[in-house]
Length: 243
Image 1 (cartoon, rainbow, N blue to C red):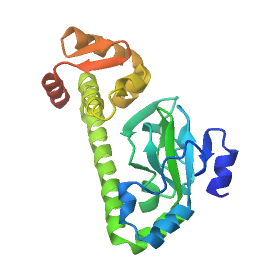
Image 2 (image 1 turned 180 degrees about the horizontal axis):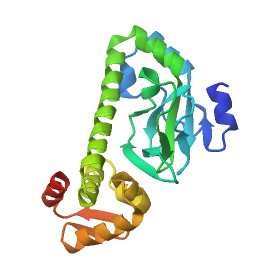
Image 3 (image 1 turned 90 degrees about the vertical axis):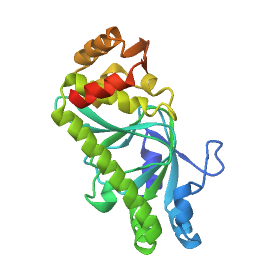
Image 4 (image 1 turned 45 degrees about the horizontal axis):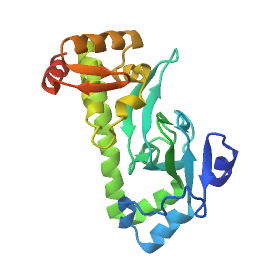
């Protein structure tokens, strides 16, 4: 099944053509400027622009990976699906980042699920075409390998946080990470409910809510409806390191 057929049949997304008012770009992102005209044409001819709505699933853990996703706009969360309806949130994807790179360099499946926290514009690029371009363009290949390694580094830090930290240390680390995204995503905490926040820390929702209230009483944070303001990042960092 081609990307176009897949997009048409899916109820979770909408294919966007160049005549559509929602059309944003045509391989205009900086990372694609490393391509030659022929390579850009190859990517252009093998991509489809898609609009995902909030809460839509972009990739499914364990599913065959026939395409790589490039996020044009919106916010996406990556998570690992566990047993008993438990998930573990790993990373927030922002515009200009790829989703599914691991299927190019390792397994031929998506190793995680990704879902839209907001409406998202995404390029679906056929993996075979991307692989062909990578084989012939060392500069572009190197840039994608850098991105892939950066994602792996983030994953290692997340795993270290989960394996060696107590509950307060995990939550402190989660709050610091999400707060670091506020420069580009000022509403990041408002996009996440308490369960999703708990899934970033590997905690139950109940434990997360209790710890948040404790942090607030200790003057570390301020809770304002769904938003969270960090008042003492230095102390939170100490809790994260020692927790």
